[in-house]
Structure formats: structure tokens, C-alpha cells
Image (cartoon, rainbow, N blue to C red; front, top):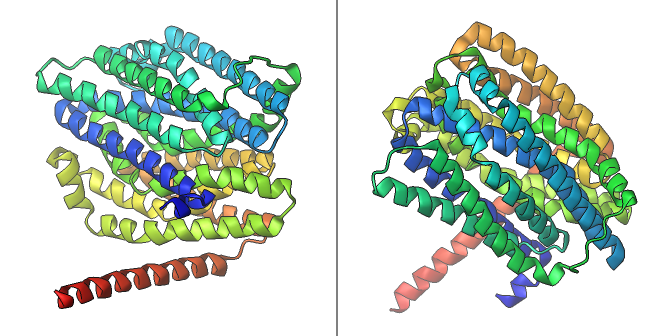
Length: 455
């Protein structure tokens, strides 16, 4: 086992997939509790709360974490590493303060625009402590990944998710009344505990020096500025169907159905997000070494590997969407079955887009990624608007599927020009992995059969 964990890929993949799995698994379990505990209007409020806070945090991470990882992992100069880490922390805290001020001033307005009432404002305002703790959490996460260490990130996310699960489970078992005040505070507390765990794992990488420099801030913004903008566009794109549905359809149950399908859809995306965390530092180093052949190989291999596991799972859920929805969310959410099927179709296209965007950012072509995401978002807004007017409840997901399909074609053409991407190579990686998995399975069966025969 020690021999296998000496490999960067195996060690990183193990912890990255575990981290993503724990994040999605406990998020899914928490969803199972809440969807049976909250009414559909309350579930819609919680879904919008998670959308707003998640879009903010992932977008901020796009500016800071990628730049932090790129420049620290590629440098052996301790002073430069310290300057980048310190400057990243300053920007992190400043953006969070600006968002907190926005919530204090505009959370009530958001509740009105999204037909969520006063509850959305309550949930957002009482999550402000969580936003403060998230500054530390995200900083220590970037420190871990910049040193190519994923163990602490897994531990931090695991403890964070388990803490929130324990809190809402106890609240549920004690039959206490539903309160967005308590839900927000529970989430804030879980982030605080997770940040402590991440700090413990990150101590060996911390120099205990705080030396931000104007030059480092400029470096982060010059590299991360486009990534920040790209993150804003891509994260709004990922949640636009729920946001536009909330704005166009006043019935909160509509957003609750989209949220239910989205949670199940998140299971398919576990490998894709884990792969992005692994691929980024490797492709950044390959680009720094001017090894274009390796960059191409890394992308094709990663996409092929992801599709190997995504394809059978997506096809299964497409075939049995209605039973899956009833089993997980209950009969109230049967209208979400078609949404889930269309989400799964998009899930087969997302690895190409997600890994392409991640790779362009890692090799210093963040501006190109930004403009592609901006055009995609503009198209999605227009197509979703037309589809919501035409198809009503299902309009947003139909529009997003159309945009995602067109976007995948565009990403393929861009990557073909940038790195010489070849679709047959991706298919070949898929077939090779299927053969290896088949051989592994057959060998396991024969070994088990021989053991039984000897006994």
C-alpha cells in the first residue's frame, strides 16, 4: 500500500476523490433530512441560500486558490511563496468583507426578487459568521493544495460536513421547530471546526510570517483576474436555471424541484471536480516546462477516465429517473424526474468543458477561458429566457441543455486548436480503462473461484 501511495497521482486521487465524495455524500444526506423536514417553500429558500453562498465562495476561490496553487507550487523561493500566500489572504478577507456589506444592505431585496420572502434574508444575514470563518478555511485549503497535499483538505471537509450533519440530525431528532437562524449558525459552526482541522494539517507549511507585497497582489490579479471573472460567469451559468426559475415562476415548489434534481446530479460530478484539483498543479508545472505534449496527454487521459465512470452512472439514472426521484426526495418531487434526465445528459458533456476550462487556466490562458464563459452565459440567458416563456416550468433546464451542447462543441474546437486535442485519443483512453477494469474484475472472480474450489 505504501508503494502505491508514493505515486502523486494515486495518492492525490485517493484523497481528492474521498474529499469530493464526502462533500457530496454528506451534502446529499443532509439534503435527505431537510427535504423531509422542510416544506417545499422552505426547501426553495434553502436551495437559493446555498446557491448564493456557494456561487460567492467558488467564485472567490477561482480568483485566489488557483493563483495561490500555481505560483507557490511552481516556486522554490520561500520569500516568494510567503508573499503570494500573504497577499492571497489579504484579498480573500477584503472580498469577504465586501460581500458581507452587500448582504447587510441587500439580503431583503434578494428575498423579494427571488420570491423567497423574509426567510432568505434571515438565512443570509445569520451566515455572516460562516463567511468570516470561510476566509481561514479557504486559505488553509489553498496552502495544502499548493504543496500538492490533499490529505488535510479531505480531513477539513470531512469534519466540516460531519459537524453540520450531526447538528441538524440532533435538531431533527429533538423535534425542534424549523428555523433558518439555526440552520445558518450550524453551517457557520461547521466551517469553524473544519478550519481548525485544516490549520492543524497546514502548520508544517506555514512560515508564520505575514509579508504581503504590492507586486504579489498585482501578480494574483493579473493571473487570477480573468479566472475570477471566468468563475463568476461559469458559476452563474451552473445555477442560472434555478435563479431564473425563481424569478420567472412565483411558485417556490419549482425551485425546490430543480434543487432536488441538482443534488442527485451532483453525484455524477464528484470525479470531475476531484480531477480538476489533481490536474491543475500538474498541468501548470507541465506548461512551465513548455511540455505541450504532456499537457495534451494529461487532458485527454483525464477526460477519458472521467467519461469511463460517468457514462454508465448517467445512463442508469436517465433510465430510472422517476424511481430515483421518488426514493430520494419523495412523491412530491416527481416533476423533477425530467429535469434530472436532462441534467444527466449534460453530465456526459461536462467533463470536456470543466477540464478544458481548468487546463486553460493552469497553462496561463485564463483570458480565453473568461471570454468563452462570458459568451456561454450570455447565450444561456437568452436561450433560457426564450425557453421559460415557451415551455414554462421545464424551460430553464431545456435552455441549459441546448447551451451546454453548443458550448461543448465550442470547447472541443478551442482545445483542438490550443493543445491539438483528438477525440479518438479520449475514446482510446476510455476503452483501455474499460479493458483494464474488465481484466481486474475477471482476475478477481477467478481468484475467488479457485479459493472456493480449494476449500
